[in-house]
Length: 269
Ligand code: ATR
Image (tube, rainbow, N blue to C red; front, side, top):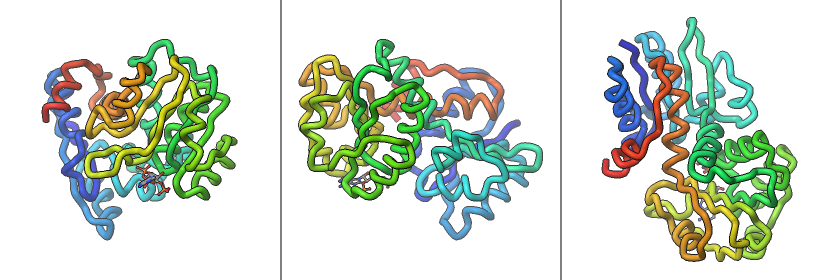
């Protein structure tokens, strides 16, 4: 029976066990998916132990996405470009680092906003952390050509702008910048329960799309503002569900479906 799990510190907030167990049950697969909370001192040892114990792999969450890629024997080119892994696959005695966040972001957009055209107009990315790296990688891969980035700590945005050839916008100028944006993406943690909301005034054109990677709550203050202004929105829960699809397929051999029932299951948990 294949065994997989999610490793983090803390890990109790993770929705992955709900998603994976739902798919195991729906697809009548005898498999095991568990959450593993481990402190940073024991992270590497724990990964080797899980591989020895016959696990097929693990999802990796906060704060291990960078440590995971550093310890892998091999990394996929997208994990390398993003500089972080959300998945470690144990295969043939080795550890492969993969990142499915970029794919999850794009598949969710394609499913939720089928008319979205990456090549049309300016995309404004807010934030410059690990999540921003995956999303920028995804946007570039999809053919977005005018990507602007703004971050509270300017030098982080500047580094990303140099690496991915983006345009840089000052954090103080984001309200004005939205006036030109065909798409606004929040990759910061602002708007998450327990965090302040993202302080922004959306002045976007009426056909702009606003997306958020925060999914607790599903309707963040940013998305509520966008909706109130009649703008199209895509929430972060969809990205979470879609990024899990390739992991499930790799470990349990069946490509699972992202359905409204799964969304409901995660929302009600
Ligand atoms: P992740 O890997 O999840 O993206 P991260 O690397 O800690 O996490 O990045 C968090 C992002 O949220 C960063 O862009 C951070 O801005 P800074 O680089 O200035 O820290 C942003 N962020 C977090 N709290 C913020 C706040 N109160 N105001 C503005 N930006 C904030």
